[in-house]
Each structure stands twice: as structure tokens, then as C-alpha cells.
Length: 488
Ligand code: SF4
Image 1 (tube, rainbow, N blue to C red):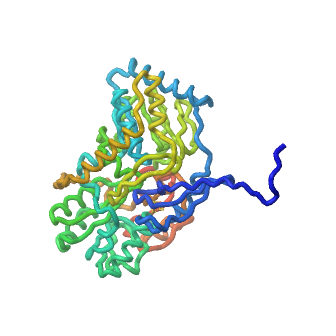
Image 2: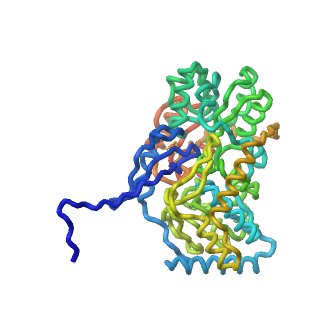
Image 3: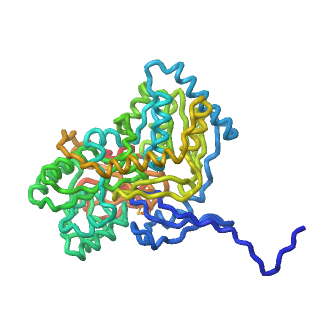
């Protein structure tokens, strides 16, 4: 039996320099992993956020402490090696039976550059295509024009004229609210155009409340009167309306204005820089492909869309149609009976590189290879050569440097018709909680016109400055299955 000195206390403390996976800002944060669990310490030295975090960042200990995913094969818990062997078998059997059908590797962006690169290579080996859910927007607008290379938020802080398009920084990207505050004190004129009055009234000079169906027209008339020095800030994610994004792109291209697209997933910038999406589809297109039998195999990476997608029931049903469903996931999620589940380390446990919304190249200081490690195990089982992590990092560095030296060309594109008419509609506001299927404040925001009707139906309806005929939602409501749905 060991004896300890009575005053000697052994504390096992692991501190990892990390970045919050909540959105594309990638705020710096120290993760403390000790005997008592996971905690965070503010990273004041990080130039991105100077230690500040939003509610999602503060909640990271809770996010990371939830149960981890375990390996499963068709509803049965198995060893990791068995799950890898089953994946290799599934890929071989798909190759023999696929006919003309397609296989898709879908990762919305919570992955390092190395992980994204290895997915691209796995897709090639298995004759599949990679998708991010942004493919339709990227192929319409052009991937590199959706990015910025400013390295920091000076572009916001020193902008003299800013237009927020359909974005409430306070709820969606709180760190941006701080940067706008600095811009305001530097003399910026800030206009907000969208369905709600952003919760930063004290710094916004003009608010234009617009029903989603009128956005395109309003943008056109607004752009006629703004200077080319203007900076537009909007949100870009799997639920974004392509017609709004295309309208912003066209107006800014004509006026030579700048645009900053804030993104919902950690490394969406990385996926754009590396050109990962070869599918050129929206999530809706992919679901249709699964429903029609055009897509028969799906790899789903860190995106439990059958839980977090707004119409998750439809997504689940479409998954049932597949011949093969392989899910690589870190936090435990429900296990579909037709799926092979492969566990991943948590985001902070991984090593690798990331690119944030300013175009800054960052690194995660964990020690696990994540998707790269799992993919290598699958490749090895398939008799293919493993990829060295260092080589993947070097490739990420090279591709990033090449992108940095490119001057993106912007051009106007055809604007698709808006998805809604001018009638009453229900609209979701994307935020780090919503896109990850996590609980959020159950609140519906409604303007004067619809408030009496909404109050009768919605327990949490709050009267606010919202465009006529719009009800805004921040948490999933199973009655409304589309981002913009009819509200009757
Ligand atoms: S969710 Fe975004 S803004 Fe919030 S702490 Fe994480 S990275 Fe920063």
C-alpha cells in the first residue's frame, strides 16, 4: 500500500490552448481538463477576442462534458476496430452494388483543415463527392469571394459606413457587436436592414424592417445611395437564402463595396479556402437525392443533421433510404439502426489547423488526429496507404498561402426568386445553439400586427420591433420545418 505525505496533493491538470467551435470567429479559449472534468479559462492574450466569449463559449464545459459517441454497427455497440472493419466492408459492398448512384461525404464545417483534406482524399478513393451544405451558394457566388483576408477585425472597427443585412450580431455573433461598438466610437454610420431590429439599438443609426420577400428590392434601392466604402455584414450558413446572398453580392459588386460573411460553423472558411465542396448542392438538394435514390451512401461528419436539421424528421426518413450511412461523431447522439457510428475525439482534443472569418490561420493544440486518424484506419482496411498528418498540415499551409496571394474576382450572378411571398411567415434565426440542435431560450419575437394572433399560439411570444407579418424563432419548433415557413 502506498503512503502519501499528508500535505501532498497531486493535481493532474491539462491546459490546452484551443478555439471555440461555436462559429467562424473561432475565439481563443484555454480548456482545462482535470480530474474534476472540463473547465475553461479566458485567453486574454488571443487577439481575436481578447479573452471575451459569448454564451456558447461560456457554456463550453457543458458542451464538452456531454457523453461521448461510442462505436455502433447497425444498432449494436461494438469495438472501434469492428466499426472500422464494418465501414470498410460497407464501402466495398457499395462499390459493387451502387450502379449509377452517388456517395456523399457531408461535413458542414466543424473540422480542421487536415480533417477536411483527408475527407477529400477518402472521397476520391471511394469515388464519392464531398459536400458542406453550402455548395449551391459557393457554386453560384464563387467560393473565394465569400472570404476575407483581413487577419483581424480592423475592417469593421475602421469602417465609416456599415450595413448589417439580416443579422442580429447580439444574438448570432456577439463578438461582432463589440467590434461594431468600436466602429461606432470611431464615427461609423450603421444601418440595419432585415426582419428585426438588432439588439444593439444604441449603436445602430437607422433600422429598416423588411419582410424576407422584399429584401432583394430593398437592397437594390439602399445600394443606390451608399458609398463604395461601405462594409456589408451578413450571415452565411446552411439555412441562408441564396436570393439574399446573391442580391448582396450583385449590389456590392456593382458598387465596389466590401462584404463580410459571418459563418455558423467553426472551419467553414477552411472548407472554402481548400475548395472541399465538389457536390455544389444545398442540404435540400442532398436530401432530395437521398429520397429519390440518386444518393445511396452518406458519410456524415460532426453534423448529426437527423437531430439538428430543422426538418430533421425528413432528414431521418431520407437516411432510412440509404444503402449505407456512416456517421463520424464526437458528442453522443441517437443511433439510427441502419448506421455505422464511428467515435471522434472532441474538438478541443484534436490537433490541426483552422481558418477563421478574418482569414487568420490558427491551430488547435490537442494531440488527437480526429477524422484524419479515423479515415486513415478506414483507408488501411481498404488496403490504401495511410496519410501522414504532417503532410496534411503542409498541404493546408500551402493551399492557404496560395489563397492568400490570390486576388478574388467578383462578378454579378443571376438572383433566384425569393422562397417566400409577402404573407405571414415564420423564420428561424441561425445561431451556434440552433445549428447544433442544442436547447436555447424558447422565445418568439413578433411585431405589432401579428402579436395578438401569435400570443394565442405561442407561449413565449414577445412583442418587439419585427417586420410586419414575420415571427422569429431562435429554437427549433417542430411545427415549422423550413427556415421560412407559412405562419397561419
Ligand atoms: S460561438 Fe463564436 S462568438 Fe461565441 S465564443 Fe464561440 S467563437 Fe466566439
